[in-house]
Length: 121
Image (cartoon, rainbow, N blue to C red; front, side, top):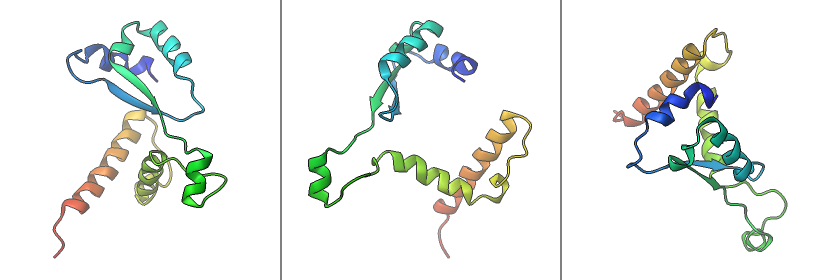
């Protein structure tokens, strides 16, 4: 997917802030950096990786929780996925092209933003 969108990163100016990519602890930033630099050597001047926070045992105990405790940033993604599932147009994927599917996703989020911006009467 990165190779298909390489022009976005090549055209991004150096004087604006880096794009931060949030990674789960299952990913290894060193390996990703190495692989991305093989495709586009200057990529690390334009992006940066950040590992999501993982609560320690002491933090879990302070919260009165044990076992699995979800990371805060992860739920931003999960919440967005739940909002998308409410759009009936996205219930089944019948799109033949990626652009068609992307357009439907954009329409779903535009509708969501308009509903939130609308003044209740």
